[in-house]
Image 1 (cartoon, rainbow, N blue to C red):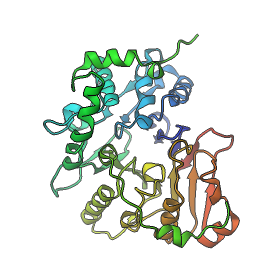
Image 2 (image 1 turned 180 degrees about the vertical axis):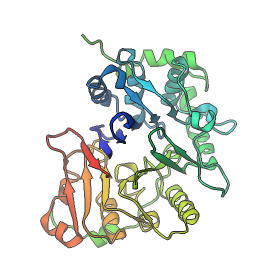
Image 3 (image 1 turned 90 degrees about the horizontal axis):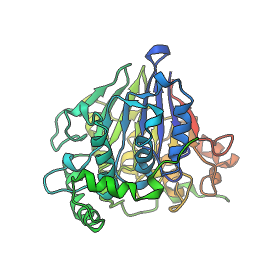
Image 4 (image 1 turned 45 degrees about the vertical axis):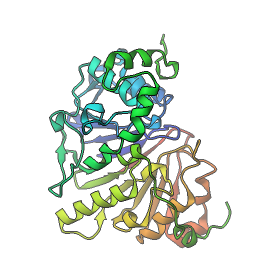
Length: 362
């Protein structure tokens, strides 16, 4: 079996992957959503037998709050007895010289050091990155057989964090790479603590053709981008990746494999379906029958109609499915029989609401 659960993570991402059978079943958690997502993660882990509360890998793709806050809370909950074989996260010490991480990244880094957690172990403690060359893309096979190929970021994307994040860290009264002050700040931030327990008709072609500016976020550009493969099934995990980095990583993989198009069983669409991240330059070289949108539409009203339209126009396949882990005003426009017939797709929503959504890759 190989499944991806889009947990109800607010406007963020929390993807729970499971693969294998019986005693060989493995788990990977990619991001932890906003702070309240911790409650979902804790409930799911608490339902497991204590000896089975384990992740083969925890990936924090980048330092935005809607990906990292739930993890910060989860790692403080010693009562769960959670064991994590390795954590992939690019903190301050993994960035090029003179580059600094943002405040949430400093907090998470301090927690990992305080817990003596294995961190970027698959990369000998170095950055999770494709580097700055044209050599083979790094790939890691986890216990149980899940293969992860790194598509981004590269050294340039990690380096450009400096201009934005040094100011934020220092404005918060921290020195980059100083764990104790970062933990002190975390413990003074109530929302990151843990509780005590006891439409209308759409012109899809026109939407897809709009010319939107590219996402210029340095944090999003540094997202860890992954291709996860198991037992002949695959899912592209695009985090909040920006279009040029996605295009470069996918292009390198296609050259390595002597292929023109990357065919996968599912795509977790970049940046919750933002029109500034989903562009034809990388959508056009990916084919899939499943597209996953992780967001409740808060704050930024994702997914953008332009992004969904580019997926439909860019991938000309049949019998495609759009998976949404919430039903919202922004996405229910795609629950339209005429649109589904015209563009050969189906829209899938959670039931009950908002319980997240499982997508079976096998």
